[in-house]
Image (cartoon, rainbow, N blue to C red; front, side, top):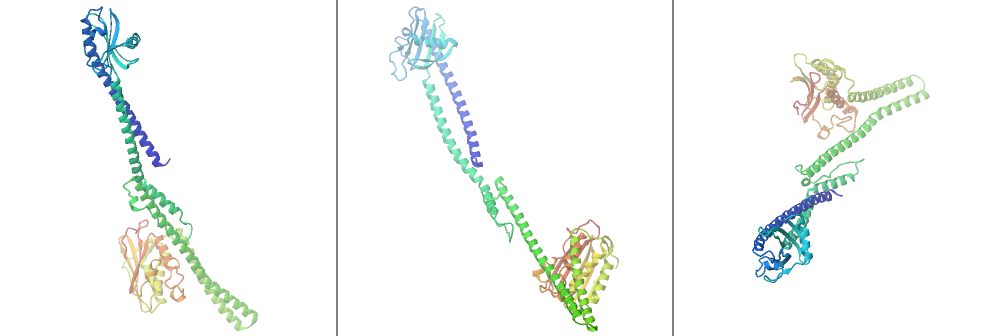
Length: 495
């Protein structure tokens, strides 16, 4: 059964059981009360009749004689007496007859029925042939010792109980119908968020999520995802889950695109030197096979030099890729005490001869700034940042290298007043093979791995690198904790 059916069955079943128990208890209590009231009334009649019997001679005090000339005040009153005159009984004014009509005498069989019922006690309920159900009471006359039986019909009690049970049954049926409708509406409204969750989950399940551009736009409506209710909380939780899955799928798609771009870029970078090596090797072989003499040797020497240059280019690319892979695995760094001030001076001294047309400046503290790190890799960070500033700025650009201490961090900044970074590539600036020049000309940049290596080395030291750029003002900021184990995650950004 569905949850709605089970809830309705449980609610209606329990309420029905409660109403039946209440009806039984009410009927039993009312019946006992009416029986007790009837016994009291019969007892009063029996006491009065016992005194009347005592006023008659015992040999003539029959039931008819006792009530001769008297008008009964209670319809259906039963009176029986047993004395020296024998046993006799009458029923006066049966229900439905007019008051004052003659009494009906009880036969010996009817008297025997009454006697049999009263053997067990003073009060009894007896069904008398021709008269129906009666409640009877037996008493003894105080003076003559005659046995007096008085009784009244139980029709009124039965009618009242029947009326009560009829009302209870009708009210119960009406209440159960109303309860069923109310419960059905309440449960249906309350479970509506669950149906919305199921519908949303079904739509999501029908989406193709295993390949291609994936975006989960389906959500449980906000009015069905109220976290203040239990069922609404399910919808809110599903929305949170779908947001997380959608973010994860977007990250997966982005990683796939980055991997495809990485493979394409790596293939492009390797294809050029491989083509050069192949061409020069074929040229050398052809020259050697066709000619002899100094000219052939000179041409072969030139070809071999070009082959060596392209081989070195491929070697650098492979080494950079290997370095990134090792840094990703947390290897390759050898920590020791490093003077960041001295490292910056050496890095600027190495960069200055490569671009004499640029204006080089350095700002370092007077005292050594010591940190724990890998001196060789940190020198590579400085060299790559300076090379990046030199390569992507025109002649006459001012490049400033500054080293400071801020709190527990050593901060290295490379600033230039060049044209700035294109906003379209700023978000992917530290990605592998990221280049501002998509033509990949040699004069406008290297392989596109320089800043990716810088980021990997800095993060391997527990630091971070940020960039803030606009035309005429570009600054790369590197923050490295001075003490091992500390983190710069909670430090304010320079951007």
